[in-house]
Image (cartoon, rainbow over all chains, first blue to last red):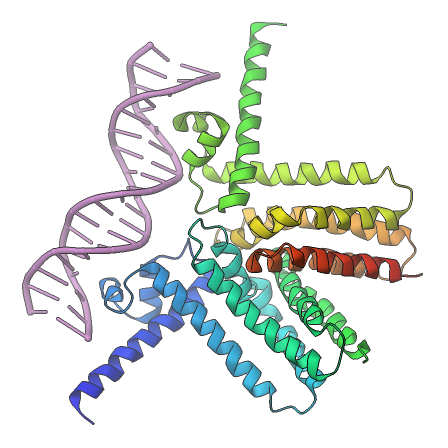
Length: 195
Length: 195
DNA sequence: GTCTATAATTCGATAGAC
DNA sequence: GTCTATCGAATTATAGAC
């Protein structure tokens, strides 16, 4: 292992620490209220040094979005271990219910980011937030398709809209119970669907 | 009519112009990206003068929230003209579908405001956004109760969550069609409910 | 009551030493 | 590659003339 590799490893390690810190802090405080100093502090990196890894604040937001997309990929890869597509969807919903406390405090990481980015005149980052949500939509559509149900993409839209709606309401009302009640309704709905 | 009344009228007129401008611009640009100068320009008032009517930016946000609450009150008052509670709910949903283009561009005014305000450490304004949503929740619960349906408040939560979810998805995907598809699903759901 | 000018602060970004 | 010091722009809020 050469020195140059060591240096590259450390460098990308810091880049990843900054990315992970950005994902956490942006979820907690939102884009506009988060300063580069906040992210740098959370990552244990001096403020000025951030610019060695990310040229602008927007690039850090982009990195956080990628982190959310990667997290979604891991999740669907795990769910692929289940044979029954319906069981995959129900496990997904159960995961949402399990995360009720965080959802009530901060909302869905991607959904709240999408809301905030859509307010910007600059129409570049908001499209990327939408792309992450579309990834979940596509995956869910594939599951409904595998079940042989009619209008699988419509069912996927209902599922993801349901998740976003219950996350927003739980967050706005600061009530995790919203996640439990609406989550259980989604579970019953998934069970009721027959080809 | 005395001079002092004339002055008061003009004053409150400006206050109302500022409130209406705040509601519009905050919906369009979000809280953090909107400057007092933006709101002042929209209202046709010089920047410095804003402080005569609102001591802080937060007070303007509060005023915008009140405007949304007032708009909701007008809406439910109009719907009270319909005899059948089910028809009231369906007319509400049809209104959401009619507003699909604005929803796709900006999302639900109250919902997006709630998302943004919940990111703030200062926990005063976010509660007020939640209160506006709770007003809609309560009204819908009353309609389901009048229909004699079981768990009216749970049904109300499903309806309002559905609205917030479809608005967020339409906004994130920039696709008004989401409002039409999910709105029609809600209409069919309302028709399917029997005591 | 109305408005201009500006103070005070914050934050994104950069320059440059090490 | 890493960090400190700081610039420059933007924004909230205030002081004070009219």
